[in-house]
Image 1 (spheres, rainbow over the protein chains, first blue to last red):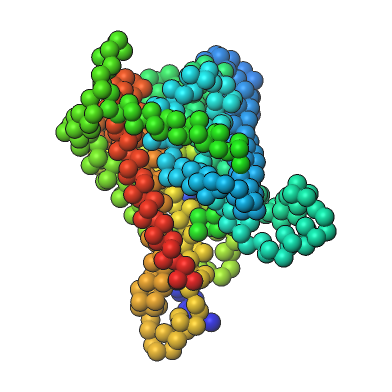
Image 2: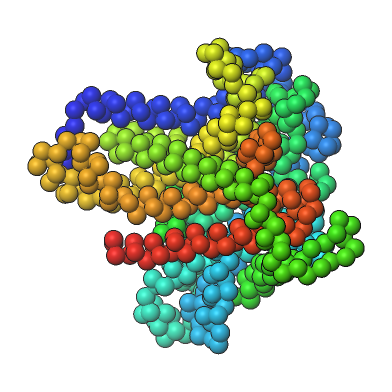
Length: 282
Length: 278
């Protein structure tokens, strides 16, 4: 190891702290704003320390403000977003682990054709085919349903590829041994593959949960009624920079509520998240 | 296997096919008559100054976002490598923005820099800068780039840290023995060895700036003021869902698909190469 002068170590820490300030400041400031009264927010500069309205603002946002976001409570929005994020994460993991299992361990006609059919979808995010996909949703009557929010986002290949890569590393001896011991395909899947892929599943879950939670364009299109909005969309509808009547203190509370759950997931599951992120993109 | 195939077919190939088909149709405004026009829509779109403008906007936006996000992340990652103590804590604090939705990131930045109530805008004005992202296109662009880059820093940071750890310490020590200073060591050894990571991140960041930032654009500027921040994806959305020019929008979708496929192809060629890097 090369020694380094204390000065350089000091500079390193200083730069890091500066970076953290930049990175966390907007989030911290939102929290600060969510604890002040509307009047304080409207008269910049806003103080750097939290104000005394924490309880008032949060309880007003959570229990009082009926009719603010088109008559939908914040609880309902959080519920919608959670269902969507969980649905995307669980659904995607479920279908991709199954198809990766089929592609890697079974030989059947057109196997590679199917693989390429799935693989190509990797290249086209929802954003580039919004209009036709929307039309399909209308034809199937899936506008304003949870299924409509979730299922189109499941149709992508990233997770399948990741599982495929992982399954390929499982030694053939293990498969043979299981077969010799009389384990059928399902038994092998549940007793050997699932336990082995636990960390991969955890990592993917975090990434996909975030992905589902932060979706914007798709929920914007698929939900017409306010009941089905996700919190991100509702937040956008609350904010109007032209009018003076945006209730900024409540907007900030809602923003905090929209930000905190995914941050908690990322920070608490950091180990798996970092592993999954760096490995899944290789 | 079957479920994923079914979903892929219904929600992916069917729409993609329809996009191709529709990109060659022209409809009158009431949807009464539809005419098959081959590539006329593509010609029309590509000749449209508004579309060319939006290409320019997208290129500027993507490049600026990628460069800012990667530059800051690389600096922080190098510093985190040096700071032995507190590394874990720094990392925990730096990955927060990854969890913030792009649209919310945009709104937070707009809140900070909003000309009438934003505290940082107030600060800028008191420094004598006439800051107004709602009227000035350049300012709006700066705001968008900051928000988009801010959100992407954590992602790049994690990859650069992983990349830095893969640089062999023996090489660095050998260089130090030969008398290379810290700056020289970085530029002649670490940076070239990071090239695969950097290149990979460049592609990822470009794709991110192209597509995932729709939320930021929609929430912060709505493509305005004027058309100074109208990116390609935003234009597809705007033409298709707001202005209802379906043929144009579909043609733009197809062009976008072509761009993504090209980018992905580049990325995969790079992945193949990376195997040799080990």
